[in-house]
Image (cartoon, rainbow, N blue to C red; front, side, top):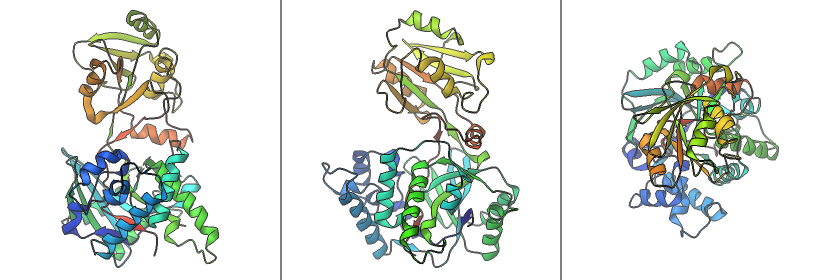
Length: 417
């Protein structure tokens, strides 16, 4: 089975794409989605967050909600708003914002290769989130939210991108976060063959992909295939359920922002005592301005209207792929032993703030007295993620914040073919 393959995209007509595309399902709560979709009957939120079309009292994880999503999807198909391309294709997908451009490949990726760890994971998944995706995809027979994958840069891929993107994009939309999203379908058989040769076969220059975002979506695709394979006596391995929707970018184009931390209290420590204990691990200096770390091994801290620069002692930094991460240093040296934070996935005393909110977002959480201390982090680097994945290890929770975000609805993978 190939690592990736072309597919017949289920997508909107270009004239209706702007009205249809929506933020990813997992960045909005139900009320935010309800407000954003109000007055927009074509919004993909009616499919990705279908609870917005039901009573607010309805549990968003019930069968009624998934059925509503399928109903809304089938209505858009029946009305011709969404339609399947006549032939299988690859698609190039550009995101452009504030001078940053990244152009990747839309394809479907092999569940078998995922199971063989040739599509490499770096995060744990939660059973409840997997169940949600399994129920949604199984009910709709459609993968509507792509998994974000990455690979080591390959010149032959860049050459094809330059050739295809010399022509105007077929579809261009502006998302709510002011990112331009452009799509080029690739139907030319010679270009399809050229793209496939980059990723498929024993001598392909790219033979491994890394999950950047979408661990629950890829895990759910694997479990759906595991259910459908034995249930299909005519299974060949070519069925759509053997693959999942993905957008694949070269790693040197990926943009990762800082993922910062705020904590409710100092776990019984006075401020002087807390700073004194930090000095066992860091060089601690005050800063006369908000501090965004300039390099790995440096952490900013905001406490009682004062910014600090914490610089780790290089001799004390572990050299294994996970231990060397700044988020690991903060947890092992500060959050766990000093502030008493247990499992950061579940501990209610800690929260996480995406870098898009800036340092002001951290100051506001502390100045409001909601939190007592904030930590600003240097962004995890793409190579670090790949190193952790290669070592078959797991990233600490909330290690990465990818920007810009893919939109839902620009292209889907239909499982009924």
